Amino acid sequence: MSTDVLATVLHQAEDGPGLPAVSDLDRALSYGQLVEEAAHWAAGLEALGVTEGDRVALLVPNSVDFVVAALATLWVGAIFVPLAVTDPKARVEAIVADCSPTVVVVGGEPDNEGQEDDGATGADDPVPSRRGPARVRCADLAASEATMAPPGAAPAERPAYAIYTSGTTGTPKGVLITHGAFGAAVRATAEVLGLDRSTRTLCVSPFHFDGSFATLFPTLFAGGAVVIRPREALLFPRTFVRAVQREGITYTGFSPSYLKLLLASPQFSELAGGTLGIIALGGEATAPADLRALWAAAPQIRVFNRYGPTETTIAVTHIELTPQLVAGGTVPIGSPHPGVTFHLVDEAGQPVDEPGRIGELYIGGDQLMAGYWGAPDLSARVLRTDVVAGTTVYRTGDLVYRDEGGEYVYVDRADRVVKRSGVRISLIELADAMHGVPGVSDVTCVVYDKDGQVGIAAFVVAEGPVSRLELRQGALRRLPDTMLPDRFELVDELPLTSSGKLDERRLLSEAGLHPPGAPAAPMAVPCTA
Image (cartoon, rainbow, N blue to C red; front, side, top):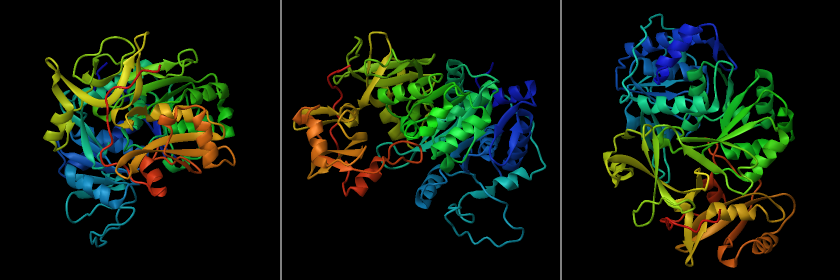
């Protein structure tokens, strides 16, 4: 089977046109209908002047419309650029200005015929229509009567999509992913998880976040059915549980932070013995305690951990976790996909080969991005040719080590292993220790600017009444005083970003704290595994 994602969806439609493909609360499409609509939408994009290599921005929420628009963009050989409908207007406009799309596809109803458009921008449609790219609503594309013949398989080196991510810089940068990298990641995910035509997938993460592609596209690649529900509704655990039960969901994936949200609800245990058989976690480190709670509530669920920076296409590893595997307190990220290579490097730039020794991870192989859109200098700083002879590798900034079983274990971000008063501290290790303090229900540790020095704040969700002094005394019983947080902040919850990760910026802001301008970023810490 081809690894070209669109070509594979076309094959699934030819082989099983009546099989369910994708549905949301408004409509459901079979594979035959999905391909038919994509052909119409592609013709509509072509009529608007979209040609091979152009960008098509998708300001569309999680929906059937998003899936059709993405496939239609690939159909005409263009590059789809997902935009977050929840982002501030200024950020959306900045991304649109940076990628210069030919067309912006906007979710919503068609414009009234003959209505004067003054180019004003609003909360629901922040893209100017008179200046810059053309704007078209999904309903207008759906009304097109034209169609396009199916394309051939796309060249592996042709860009397929661009995901904008801020990383640690705060400035959006477009990660450009080729068809070859896209297809390799999607196929590996489908094969590792064993997805097939019986798979029914619930999409949880927002589609502007590439972690969502680990559920959406591998399912379509395998001929399964994708179920989409509004992101806002899924923030209520009861909605998630109801969707799983009513739709017969067999597979889903999301962040560990979202798992914590689900586990906090008594309704999660209703999934015990049900259809849900696989959950794939990724985007953050996973706490062993949360895995134990998941298996206690629904022991039939198989849990896979996945790892992969956006720059290496969705995920580059998958590993099935078991109680025995995480019994020692570590959660491995697994081994690289076929065609992907891992390289660990120490502070001196020398290879790290022996198990248990930590190094910074560089990734090479089939899933590397083409580069950052319009930023060759930035691309050259992270796509390195001077680390491994004859190979281009991506510098992840992640610290990992290889365990005795040959699996890789994530330690922390290099910029989250901070040096304070001469002591190196992993914020993940610190948070793990704080989880054992009496009265602590959940906790995360974040660095902040403490009068020009690096400070550490512990944001704690308490199980009941507890004081900061009691938290400090409890922490002292588990940690040396050199590792104690400088501040303990009591919060009602740990807020999430639109992609389902912890919103550390919001935590700092609400506490009146500021991130350090340049936190220390040592590359090596003692291995405590």
